[in-house]
Amino acid sequence: MIVLNTTFHVEEDIHEEFVEYMLQHFIPMSLKSGLLTSPRLSRIFGREEEAGHSFAMEFQVSDPEMLERWNKEESGGVYTSLLERFKEKVAGFSTVMQIIE
Image 1 (cartoon, one colour):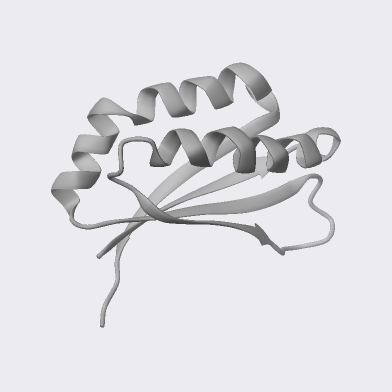
Image 2 (image 1 turned 60 degrees about the horizontal axis):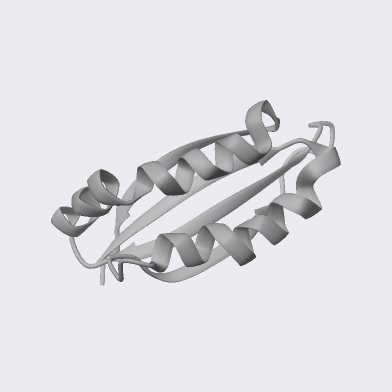
C-alpha cells in the first residue's frame, strides 16, 4: 500500500476556511475516481514562533501505478482549484511512502 502525504502550510487568517475547503471540496474531488482511499487530514504541531498553521493530507493508493494514473488524470484539477482559491496563502509539498507491514 502506498501513502500520498501532502503537507500544507497555511497563513493564519485563512486556516479555518482552508480546513473547511479540504473537508468539503478537496477530499471529495480527490476520491472521485476511486483511485485514492482512506483520506486523513491532520494538524501538524511545530514551533510556536512560526506564523500560520501546517496540515498533513494523507490518502492511500494500492500501488505506484495507480498513483501515477491519479497524478496524470486527476491531480491537476484538484490542486489547481485549491491554488486558485487560496493563491499564495498556501504552500505545500508531497511525499510518497510505502507502508511496511
